[in-house]
Image 1 (cartoon, rainbow, N blue to C red):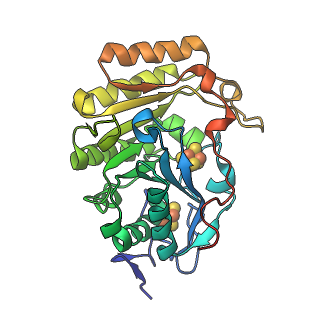
Image 2: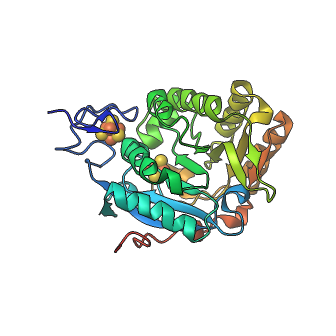
Length: 305
Ligand code: SF4
Ligand code: SF4
């Protein structure tokens, strides 16, 4: 039987590049989710890029589940171990209004791809009362079709561009097709929102920020990604956010390089490359490689009405 959410048939899910075709009303996809929205936190967050967090914070809603399988994931608890609570579309809409009421500069949907039609429904239900920009904060592992469904709804795209090499994407995230999907999705995101716009306080109103986490032992891959981005998009129409806070997971990985932090030499060389290419954006101090960037997932803002 077909079941539709915002016109999307969830009985044969192809929302992300995994294209499992799962009937979400009866089973779970690679993302670990069925047809119930699950989230782990809805709260102000101060550790995004300055133009997103501003002084009040970004209104982040962290969704449970993820269709990538990164071996170094810092959020495994919510991405693959199912932590979170079930919320209705109405509750999701109420969370957005509550975050706006708390002073959030924006509503920031974190890893929401596998709930895209549900999120669109929730936004529509509160659209007339929601007056702040909406941010799509994703792994970059997206189909163009799903990103197109967000046209006119999302104001700011904040995707990762993790890998350019299929072999590395396969090894670390079990997704050899990541590079081609991420590239096409980022181009579509840019097509929708165009050049960045800011308010009088420097808070972003519209635009694209591409994030890249530099992995230890892979500075050349990072530089290749920067080069690719500089060829893909007009340089003054997107921002880059270079992240040096890679933190090795507690459990040892079978890759020696991923069991250490990034060195200053690796980080500096990637920053220099961005500068040489004339890219604009943000970088973080290496000293920010601390656990406090990962918020505590405690169901804040999700329990009780
Ligand atoms: S969103 Fe989940 S169920 Fe849908 S295609 Fe992706 S992994 Fe499969
Ligand atoms: S995309 Fe992010 S949340 Fe998903 S598995 Fe990778 S690191 Fe974890």
